[in-house]
Length: 488
Image (cartoon, rainbow, N blue to C red; front, side, top):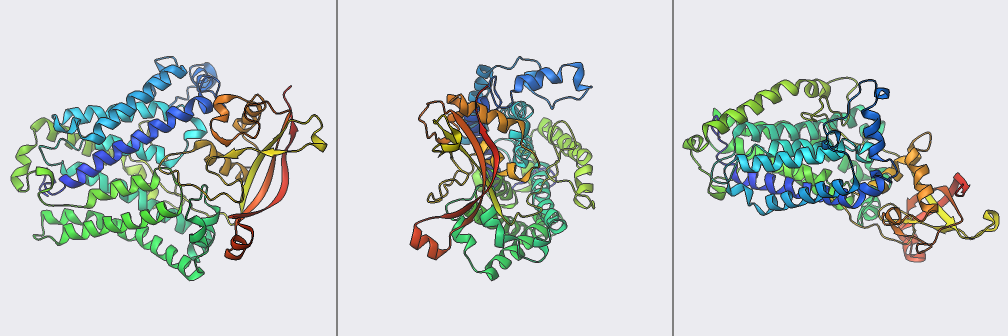
């Protein structure tokens, strides 16, 4: 590194630009497939109603975050057009084509992805209320200033990537230490593999590992999130300390973050949270001479003056907007997944400050029979969340199944959300777009006479139960959440 050019971080830039673009590709595909039935003109929480409220006097001056749909009237067709545009631009960036042009070209592409996806998340309501949405937006904004292949990446932007990983990891670590006792007594992962929102194919095997292993997992997590992030900044010492040691220390810190995140990828389904962290952690990996970038201090000369001015301005901007996030990291009442400005830059991150110890699932059933008391009830199956006790969970991440995730949160609330009531109504109507979000419609498109919702407690089957009964889950019925309901 020198003052302006991170001459050994050409490989890191390749991973960052292509990886972040790939995650935008997934995010736009997810929105193309799911936004309209969830939030479209006839969605469970229609975005046009939100936009109408935001423009009315009833909003009392409260503003939505920036979105194209404040100026352009929302329609499902326009939403689809925006998603397809995002898919095309992100695919070009994954292929590396804009990166061969001057640095302002990939900048424009990434800023288009950033603002286009923000236009969706800003009206996405609870279905887009996840920390990895703002993480992707912030990563996309910073990626816009990494430059082109014929020049080294700017030092200030690489350092800002480290600062993003630091907030992401250290923030999550502090949330856990301040959160549930299970993180302090090292029992959190005794439960987490079983009760996490959407288990993966290996989650049961991870859950059945010995308790001493789970305690080791928690200790490893605390080390990776509370100690390692400080060493991401070690390469900065190379500005004053000669030799490869500072850069090696930073690369090792990045590698530890990557390895711990790969374990989470293997044992869960956290949309693109883990994959985004892995991609961002590569920002700490310096490889001299990678991808033809200049490898000497003279590399600064390869940065156009206008690009030095732009990236320096971004650095100054981040110094200003990062103060609330820095203060939050050490606040007694630390906020998790919070944004301190309308543009969702320099956010606070964190996840799973507490771990649920029992897995409660809401199961929706329907029947064609006229008499609900004597009816034969059949289950609707979701794609990701547990249902059929014999079905092994599938791997969906980094794809995000938004309805399945909200179904996990539902039993944790004190009352049913409006979207769930509308979901039951759409099932009674046999609404095709809504049914497309599910894995199994037990009535093959026919309208049920009644639907109901029951709660069950799920747990992973033991090895003996798996051999004997062929089941992955064991469940017992608890309560009726919504009694038999019909269309008015």
